[in-house]
Length: 249
Image (cartoon, rainbow, N blue to C red):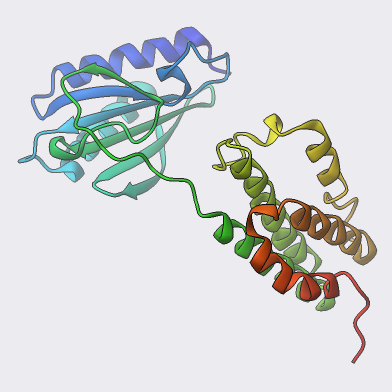
């Protein structure tokens, strides 16, 4: 596994690459390392502003070749986001490096975990949290799909939908408590009684009865956490309860 020293060495070298590239006009570190020293397992996330007359695709290609040649980096995937392009790399030692480029006119913080290292940053509106009714709606949809997959005896697919619905439910629990609802980052920060209530929503196996028991617990949890969307929750509660009962035709 990578060490903190490895991460710092990559950090310093990438900033050196930026300093020698006239297309780069600003740079920042984002993520946990922007607001603290992180921990032993923190990945590296650097973002740069590119002069408006430069191509994001060209600079991303040039830097990728350098990272591959110097560090044996493997590009995993790209994620366009607004005017920005993110490329996620895996480096030897399992160090994840997230590199992103943005046109200078659009470069700036979209959240609190942003530390400007050089250059300037524009004021940008923060990324808002997903609407509570959308989190609830996704959970309802996924639990319905889970039950249908159980009836079809598509148990692996059922567990996929069950787990996804459970994640949306836990995200709803986070959002209603002022915690970040993104990527499970605050699931461990939920009150113990909330986490314990969802423990039964983890299926003990892929057997039908265990999947149904976990679905029942997940739906109970969703309805407990739906206080902020009472109106829609009350309308669909009968159908949700029906998902936990025997079906006859």
